Amino acid sequence: MTLSVAVSGASGYAGGEILRLLADHPDVEVRTVTAHANAGQPLLAHQPHLRSLAGLDLQPTTPEVLAGHDIVFLALPHGQSAQYTDALADTRLVIDAGADHRLVSSVDWAAFYGGDHPEPWAYGVPELPIAGGKQRENLRAAKRIAAPGCNASTVSLSLAPGIAAGVIDGRDIVSVLAVGPSGAGKSAKTNLLASEILGSANPYAVGGTHRHIPEIRQALIAAGASADGIRISFTPVLVPMARGILATSSAPLVEGMTDAEIRGAWEKAYADEPFVELLPEGVFPRTADVLGANVASMGLAIDRAANRVTVVAAVDNLVKGTAGAALQSMNIALGLAETTALPLNGVAP
Image (tube, rainbow, N blue to C red; front, top):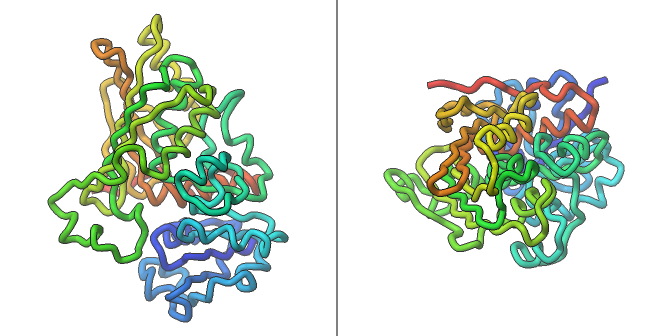
């Protein structure tokens, strides 16, 4: 049976990427696409690359338009998704690509977002090691899923195996990320103009202010760290590439661990994962290698002089960081083959 799908925020980057992947999914049919300011216009006026969906026009984003589908994706700015929850109570599966339903802690929500704390949903990072297994188990038959923040899932996947295996100390994590501007959305902003970012690298949300920090802490605590056992210095840097995240994360080693035990934690965690790869020793990823792919690629180095492990991870922020994670989680929740319609191969050059 073909399942009907509505995608809100379809004129944006995340919504467009969700549509690109859904277009090749054999078990679903995209019937409705919505927008706010762009409602009434053809989808192709904003997503000209989505030729197979040429017959769709952008409808207004209202509860009435979104209701009546089997699956609804909410690809809306942060703070706008929660208003549709009650109206979609009868929808079989709702997936939020925004931040509204990611955080369990109301204290963290108040500190980093403010306003009413929406209900937390199942977190859409299937491969994430958690105490007793993988986050995948919490997604089976889920009816409400929160897709991850792209930076947050990249850092969490980088470090959770070490936390879960007890080989790294989470109280002194340092993560620096090179991030493409598409992660900030499609709205016109002066700091994202080509003349502002070309030929430059610009740090932002410095000093513990980035909203993905509590999401990372939440994931690493789920992996087995104590609530007071995670301290992270997180610094994203905007760089002139449309897509991509290259996250360099390091943490102290627990005393007495051998190199084999340390690397073995990551090998064991991701050995059977189709969309997370640990590269051979001494090899590190490039963002170009994961462009267009639903893959997190990572390399690991053990620095005995500094007594730290360093993990370098690359993802396409719009695929594995957002839309791919959402579809992968959808497949699991619906009992479909997890890899359906998800690209393993990247695009080169």
